[in-house]
Length: 282
Image 1 (cartoon, rainbow, N blue to C red):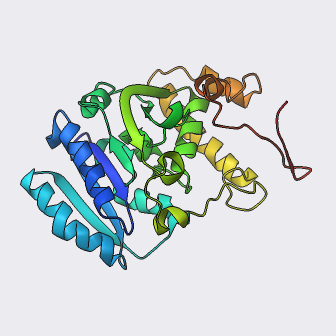
Image 2 (image 1 turned 90 degrees about the vertical axis):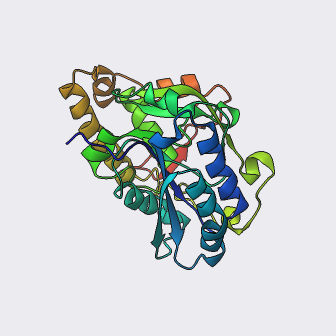
């Protein structure tokens, strides 16, 4: 099957936010070169009357006037700790060449951003925007459809930017495109300090807690998914020797990540699972 509903699907889970969401959506469609090839999927909690009422009264009329392709889903509240479940469910509602895991505090800054993404069409890469302080991750991951098709989800963990970026670095398929996005988050810009920002529990605190991003079982899942993606890469003639060398202990898996971490934002930790301790590399 090769038919697609759109070229780019923007997946936007949001809660209790109004003008911030409006600004984010308008930045996407006002700066797109071909807005008709972009669709947006909203995800709201079914108890979020503030956010959804603003969507119906303000955002939806604007999108209808602009002929934006959109849909909105309602969820039983899952919380920030299960953010990936919103995104995976939203991705299943449409078939797009590229999926963007977007944030309601993200603001597009580049005219023709959609053209930059579609210039990569046919390539099997995780794409990344330029974001705050040149962060080495793809903070708003841009994921090809085949990735979703192979794994059955975009991300099985709450922290989708770190998850997909680490996979891409291990597979050597991380690609930054010439597009700038402002991440207007309180701890970065001083803006948007609200309950949504404050209530963000993170499963990235204790590598010995089940479900934590760096827990051994979770890490193994990330690697096993990489093996599935590498199998596809090999089947279409892509070079997978970098990843194979990682598996064989011949390649530092974070060499490319460190090279891109120009402002040293991503601290590397060595995890000693056997002795239940974490050591900072020398």
